Image 1 (tube, rainbow, N blue to C red):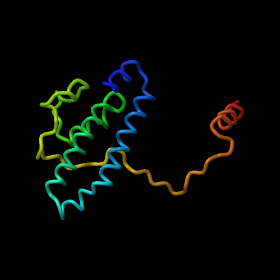
Image 2 (image 1 turned 30 degrees about the horizontal axis):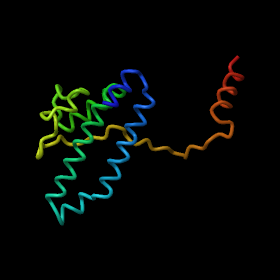
Image 3 (image 1 turned 60 degrees about the horizontal axis):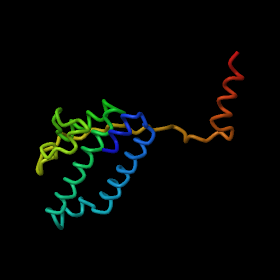
Amino acid sequence: GKMASLVACQSLNKACREMEIVVRMANKYIDEQAPWALKKTDVSRMKTVLWTLMETLRHVAVCCLPLMPASADCMLDQLAVKPEHRTFSSLRLAEAVVAAGTPVNKPTGLFPRIELDAPLVADERGAEGEAAAARAADP
């Protein structure tokens, strides 16, 4: 629906904003539902929460394919999503939904954490000032 039309008209900034909203909502959901705690008290509910997250991540990964194909494919591989179910149109297909109990591949980090020796400090000149300084320094 919405993502396909945003990507089709190359409104990539809007598409990224929409994806950010979904990812933030999923993050809030996992924090609030706490499946690690449900494992001790309500295994059935834990399974529902994890399935909901898997299905949400499937949608996120498919929507990210045009923007970050390698990362999205890696995510879909980890979720065991078949290659034929990696299209916008597949998001509406009942047979593309992650089946309950689907084993997933061992997760690997898609975006490794970057460790910095020193914290980044904003320059008071800002981006425009930096660009001007770079042009002035270039002979």
